[in-house]
Length: 295
Ligand code: SF4
Image (cartoon, rainbow, N blue to C red; front, side):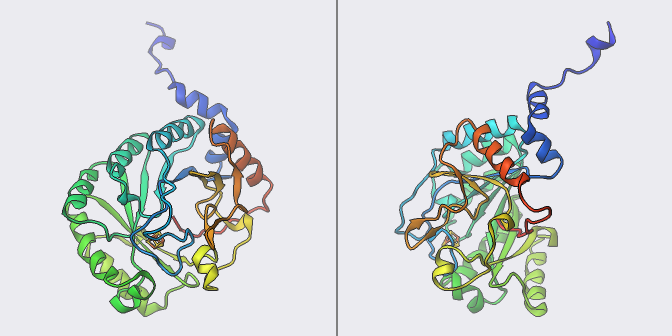
C-alpha cells in the first residue's frame, strides 16, 4: 500500500472551506466564525430595552427551520464554525429543540432565551439538549428580584432562578447574560450575580455582561450605547428579511425594520451575503469592532 493510499483524504468540506476567502478570513480572525439566525420575533415579554421591539403581539416573522438548516450547512461549507439562534423567544416555536439538535450536529450552537416559558412540557423537551453541543443563554440582569424585574417584567427573576439550576442538574449547558445600561455593573452587583450563577455551577466564563444597545425600544426610551456601523460585531446574521451585519442589525424602531445594517435581501447562496460582509469587514478601520459579548 502506498503512502498516498494510506494518508487520510481531506474531507470535501474542508477542501472547499480552505479554498474560500471567507474561510481564510475566519481562520485569520478578520470576521467571526459564528452565524446567527432570527428564528422569530414574538416573545411573551416586552422588555423596555428590547431592540427588536418584541412582545406577545408583534408579527412572528419566523424563519423556516428548513431554510435555517440549509443556510447553516452552506455556511459550514464556506468555513463558518458556530451557530446562534435568537429572537424574540425561540422556545415559543414548537420545533425549536429539534432544530437546535440538528444545528448542533453542524457546529457548537447557542440559543438565547428569556428563561420564562418553560412549563413542565417545554422543560422536559429542553432537557433533551443535554449531551448536544448547545448552550442556552438566559438573561438575568440583577441578583435582586425588584432590580431585575424593573425592565424585564414581573416574576421574571423568580422564573429564571427556578429554571436555571434545574436545567443545569439535567445536564443542559447554560450561560447567563446580564444587560445593563452602559455595560458596567457596580462591584457589589457583579459579586452578587456571580455568587448566584456560581451557586448553580455556572462558571465566570459562562457569564457575560453587555450594554443596552441604542436601537429599537431602547432608542425610543433614549437608553443604551450608541455604536457606529463598524463597531458592531461582523457576525453574519439572517432574519426573515435578509442578511445583516451582526445580530443587532434586524432591529425594529417604531414598528419599522431598521435597514442601516442590512447587507443584502438575498440570502441564498450564502456565499453572496458572506462575501458582501467580508468586503465590508475588510474596509473597516483595524480593530474597530467592539467586543460586546452580546448575543
Ligand atoms: S429583550 Fe428578549 S426577552 Fe425581552 S422582549 Fe426582547 S426578545 Fe423578549
